[in-house]
Length: 116
Image (cartoon, rainbow, N blue to C red; front, side, top):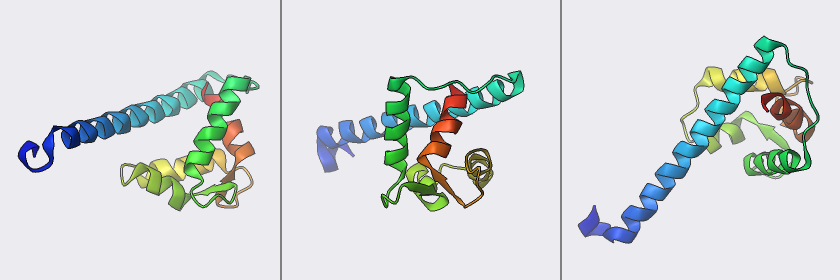
């Protein structure tokens, strides 16, 4: 690898791998937080301004076609095959409160605020 592409390419690949793992771990932790909050019966709290900004950015990162909705295809493409279909289904059950098959920013913020 090093001979073919050089050390800069190897460093770049390592950075991408590390960032992917960080993102995956963050999402796992958020999911676990949601489960523990639901089991504890914690009430929804209003997100702070910084949390709201983070949720909006997360939403925009997933909304690839910029139609102000997240669909399963967009979520699946962001995880690049590392998402179990059951997890994807559960995410939509938890988020998509109006059962349209898509998640709006409001639905995502409501869901994400339960994870904090």
